[in-house]
Image: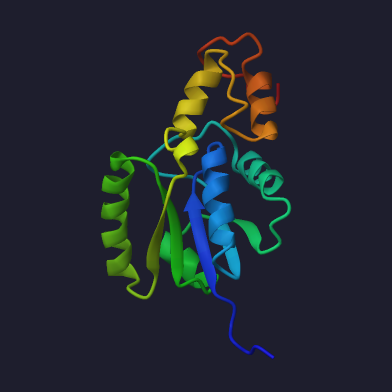
Amino acid sequence: MNDRAPIVAINPGTFDPVTLGHVDVIRRAAAIFDRVVVGVVRDPHHKQTLFSVEERVAFLEEALVGLPNVVVDVFSELVVDFARKHGARTMVKGLRVIADFEWEFQMNRLNHLLAPEVETMYVMSSPEYAFVSSSGVKEIASFGGNVEELVTEGVARRFRELYPDGRPGAPLSPQD
């Protein structure tokens, strides 16, 4: 009988929207850790979201079906406090390009000052997703481009609803 505590990691982000690159990183983390908590930032301070937190959570839950050791949770506190709340000693982050590294390096140093017991593990993007970003897929979709190979079916469907004519500009409100 194994009496060790499960090894928990968090994977925080805005996921606005979740892309297949995000899903790839989460699946790979799920193969390493006993439990992965995908943390969705409720109201990020450094960017405005297109999708509500409820939509972002629903997109993730749909994308992660079949991964029994992965759960989705929303947070509004410091990411290190979110990690502590879940008993996670590891934060998993995906890296695609050099610009990601620069931002993540800064965040790593700040997080380490706040919580030296929480280590950050970086997962390099799979080559087929190295160019995929949430902002990129939003831009493509807003001009009527096909994003089906970049996002989950639920996200692609929602983009078709938001931009039925492929027109740039403000999307329809979620109530429309």
